Image (cartoon, rainbow, N blue to C red; front, side, top):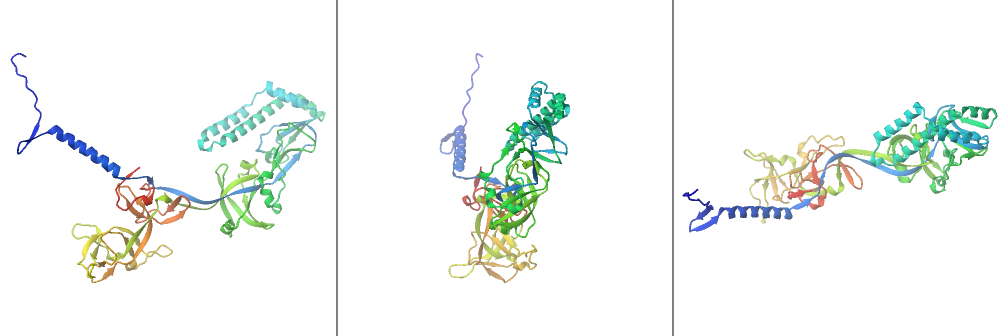
Length: 486
């Protein structure tokens, strides 16, 4: 508006004695720039250490072997020659009297059966329910890490469809089959007793433990013949085989080291590599022709491997559970040893644990006792084999590490003339805890180790706990070092 004066905002100026002027904006800018530069410098100069979160875990002592499967098997041979059709899927339990296959001498029924499959394929509710149930179970249990099970599922589903379709078609042409049976040109084969049906042979069906030899373990020489690929059979040739006992055995060639481990035992746990399932097996060690064999006896699970003659297993000798840490985290640190009874607390309101130290001077004399705070890393209570501590606490030894205390210094017992000269040292295994942004050594009590990990005892007085963060590389840090975990 006319007549009014416009006021200009003046910059704030800091005036110093002597006439110096400093703009406050420049001060703020310099402060921010310095702060950023300091943080960048700190980040670049800090030690960056990869961390590992301590978790509970298990380490298994296992050894891999390939075993030879022995079962009670019998081969059923064809009494006629002709076209061959199957009605029960492979590796399926069959009760006595279950229809397994048929032989058509002139081939007419087999042709009509195939035509009925193509034209009149109608599945019953029972068959449809079974197939849909298999699909649902597979979908629920699907795991990307076990993709191999997809092939087993495909094979099982194909077998179910074959069984359902062929049985349905057989019912459609029942009048033809009855006529052919009356004329003894069409023959049905049913299970003579309960068992698991398998449509292959390999020449080892009647193998006994007494016949074991190293040559039998040569898989390259193993010849397995499928009975379903030919579509026809000659009189006297195998039709199928029946595994008639759920009890089965696995024979393993045994080396001396494993023999020593298993000597004197009766039961061991094994893992099947194919599907990662485990089982307990009774075992004996038998010698044949200068070779030791481990004979594992099992009472169930045979049907899962009815198609196999050789199987890869792990023998699980032992299993240890506790806090699981990488071997790379383990470090060794040297400590001074002092009687635990010399430890005391600071005067006044201080609750720090420490020692009354008399420092040794160059002339051999000792200074007056001064209180020096120390960190106790471990106390050896001289526990016996049952874990009971020594009742005489005077025998307990504390492990300490303090730069202000040197070998040759003396420590004084409170309210006593007793003195102890620090001379002995010992090493402890441990890891560096980095929960608080700096490295703190924590003693560990290993239980078991393999090439990569160690199981350590949990809930120890000076050790680590679950979910602690430790340095992945124990050799890369030192006590008290400021670090940035990644």
